[in-house]
Image 1 (cartoon, helix red, strand yellow):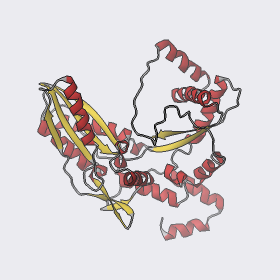
Image 2 (cartoon, rainbow, N blue to C red):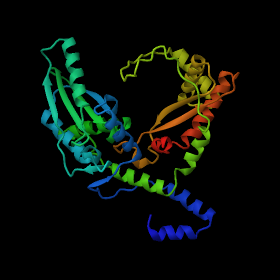
Image 3 (cartoon, helix red, strand yellow):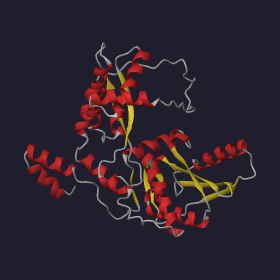
Image 4 (cartoon, rainbow, N blue to C red):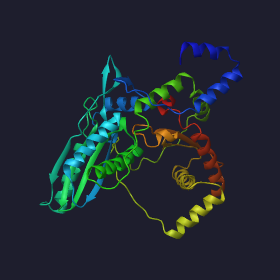
Length: 365
């Protein structure tokens, strides 16, 4: 904000100033020339801090596997990866600190290294073990080295391949991985002559979002949300999950349990949610809250949930760390029916997500 604009805002009445700020909040981030360096966004500050505490922690990385069939033009795949890195400055960004203050440094160009191995001679157990080793290598990313993308190409059969990739979470989120996969497929297809629509120019780079978010913070855009959270969390909760299965000292190791619901159960569950005006997310969340309240014998729960935080159309196809964490506090009536709990969950989720753009890091501070 320029000094002249700040002076003009001070001349407005409180109501006029509030109206101006609310209207200005509707403006999406705009594209600007790429800087050589820029200050980290609040979310990036969090991952920088976590990386200093536990360097190389797997939870700080995003990994994925792309299964490919048919004839594969490996040089074209390498070219497509390099074009992806050229397209998204986040992949050409490294992070260094001076006097303890981290800064994002954007490289003008970078090559995406592609490690390749032929696993056709290995049995299934050996393939699984080697694949796990290479996925771990893809996640071994140093923040000071560019690009923050690692790839391995595995050949499993004459016409069967797997592309493993890892990206540090400081420059990407879950939706960014989907953007990466879709654009890689489009770029590779164009390079090998497949009919495909060319990719439009990248709508925004991550520094545009970081600067826009910082400008909003300077204008006090997050103050109402922080005040709302302060009221919601004024009294600290005392609920703790039973520690029967809690590892001594804590560990990041875990597993995944999948359970498929029968079609009639799913249909009935969603019908109950719709009858109370709830989305599928809110309905499933209510079930989760009900289970946690029974396990903890508590009527006061605080849960964290990720939010995409892509609040403008121009951010939908952008690549970077946009995801945020929201804090949901549930305190329903002790004898509430499940339908009453649904309404409580719906109200809490709606109110919380109205402040979903408040950086979680500022809430912690």
